[in-house]
Length: 100
Length: 100
Image (cartoon, rainbow over all chains, first blue to last red; front, side):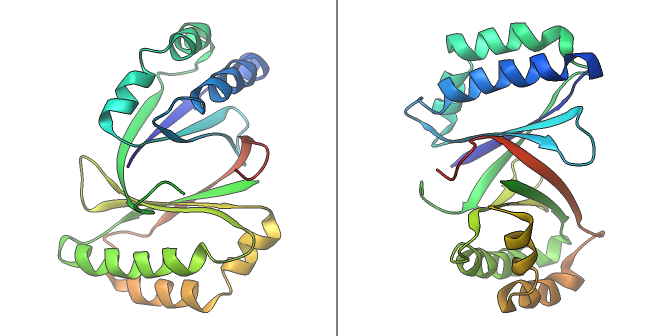
């Protein structure tokens, strides 16, 4: 299992719209067969900072996500909402070993 | 639901022992009634960097975790394995809204 943490810093005036677009992406992403988690969170001490925690069964299923209509729509919709380029960090999940 | 991301940079010679201690912490933490996720991951491009993704139902259940024997044992065991102080970032989970 692999996970990508995507860190997004959003312009203050775009926070509400960003949440709406990312929730829509969440609801479709969790339906993907290879998806394990797609948690969407707001930083507690800074409401303009968000994290997407995207866990997939394999590299292949993570790659498939990037080709979905909902991901591409999200990417286009939020493009001008960001205060700086978003940052993704890739991890290998050591525990749990299996989907739970 | 809230989540704490704990970022740990481990001394190269302590990686194996750190994994062992953190896996033990994972196995006990997921048994806590208020725990939702306790994912333990290794950064893909740097095996000396780790993330603990700890999701709890409430502030209270996250606070209870910090008093458990397994957490206290982990904290003591890994104390000298770190290359720099660990960093925790707190988030509020917007989606999913409920445990799933």
